[in-house]
Amino acid sequence: MARRSNHNLSDYLTLRRRSSLPIWLDIAWRVMFVLGLIAMAVAVHWFDRNGLQDSHDGDVSFLDVVYFTMISITTTGYGDIVPVTERARLFDALVVTPIRIFVVLIFVGTAYNFVFKRTWDNWRMKLIQSNLHDHIVIAGFGTSGKEAVQELLARGTNPEEIVVIDPSDDALSEAEKLGCAVINGDATRDFVLLDVKISRARSMIVSAGRDDTSILIVLTARHLAYHLPISVAVKAADNELLARQAGATTVINPVSFAGLLLAGSCEGPKISDYLSDLASANGRVKLIQRVITEDEVGLAMNEVVKDGLGVRIYRGNEVYGFWQPQAKKLEAEDIIVEIVPGNGAPDEEIETEQA
Image (tube, rainbow, N blue to C red):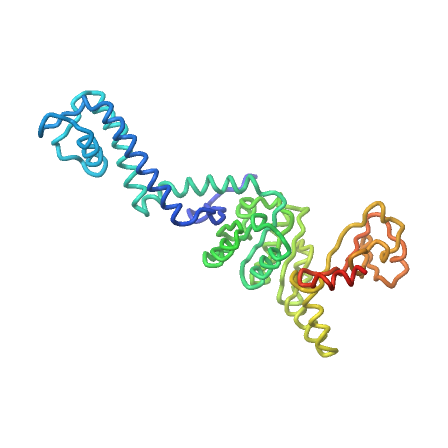
């Protein structure tokens, strides 16, 4: 049974990204467009000046042509210079009049927004959508969502590969300044996620601020993109299971993580400092995961980790530490987690680690 579409005007959303043109250049091209239209009208009137009649002195000079063109475009005319041939009148009716309308619409902001902006935005949206492949969707640009985007950028992610969904224009303005594509909408709605091409995304981060909303977003995304890795932040511990049942690949509880850092600090302040380092792209160390290569099958984990320390192996549904016998012989499709020098590590420190 087909589902009836019942969208309001506000439901027609626009995927956008901050324009690469500075404001002065954006204004300049509009002014140049208007001047180009006027120059075209002046040129045609000049070449067809025999079709004009000047009641003042009977002679139509170039200045008369410029004067007549400007008066025709900006007003209804004074009648001192008039088109007398059918060709001149036809040009004024079919060309000068549309030019007059264009000039008014371009310089009247409200009219411009209503008449042109929607078409322009739709064209830009389709252009951005056509380039959305293997991107990251961020649902919610609050404190956690913003931190996630900044961390992704710090890790080298191209901002054009990030799409932010949020109902707040202020939040989207911040995301747009970072170079991300943004869309004002409700991520629990199918058509919003379809607009950001969720089926072609590399991963999704959900941080809506409310656990119920975040879980609903996960459900919506999961039924549209079954393969999609989804990470979600929840505040209540009893909602972690619900988030996983909804289809979340990774569930993060900021409160629990903060508790872990606090507890670790009781054993020694350096422990929480090291954990924070691991979580940040700008720390002295960082965690990475990778699938082993064919050449590494059969080797020990410490033999294949060259630039850091191997700490964990994921083999199917099993997890093994570096001290366990399974770490002595890697198998095909094993995923290993390594600690490697981070972006904040000095060069001499990296050389020491490698030595």
